[in-house]
Image 1: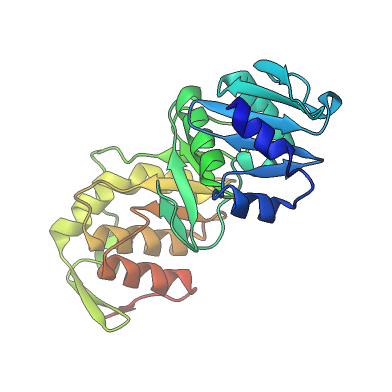
Image 2 (image 1 turned 135 degrees about the vertical axis):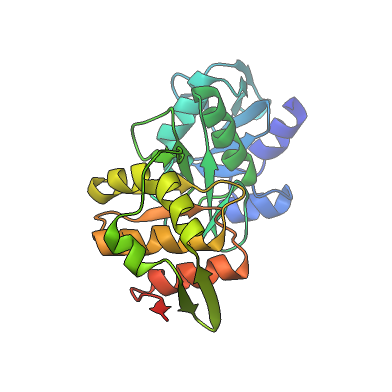
Length: 265
């Protein structure tokens, strides 16, 4: 690490792009002649002179032969918090555009789930080490504050379909793009018992929310949620997981995402 710091210090006149190309990495950031090179467990900080080293960083500080200064810092909670103030893209932000759940995919904003501060810090380090500066989103049932999105998990209830839902759904076929989806009375009952509670919450929710669909969720459940939210005129967007959905799921999202409804037959 010391030898690497010496090599970086000799190239501090280069731009961030040139430094990344020279050291063959995307995970390198230049701020005011200070270079941050993250790794999973540690971070190397190399500065043109000592006063440029960020305050409050914990780690081993050492001088370099050319008058520059460097630190080897552990990726602990304190140092992650310091880096979040220096590099704003290390903080969760509101989702935008197309999402990929739990992965870094080209052209998509990653959406991660964190149920503890430790998990959130691991996600932040992953973003740091990926070199991604386009932003990321986080949802949680346990964490709140900032831009962390509420994560809702449906719970089974004894709810029954009301008369309007029986008329709207049971025995009807819905046309989605060029695909048809038949909605049986049994499927309506399952949807009502599984999603009535979250729909009540979402109808009055004041912030963007993530709804985790069960692994065995059928396309009719996605249609039911989308259509009910549309009818309820929900005030905030709802992200439905899984984000990378099969074609029929995608047809439902495209239909309601464009502000139109499925044609009922």
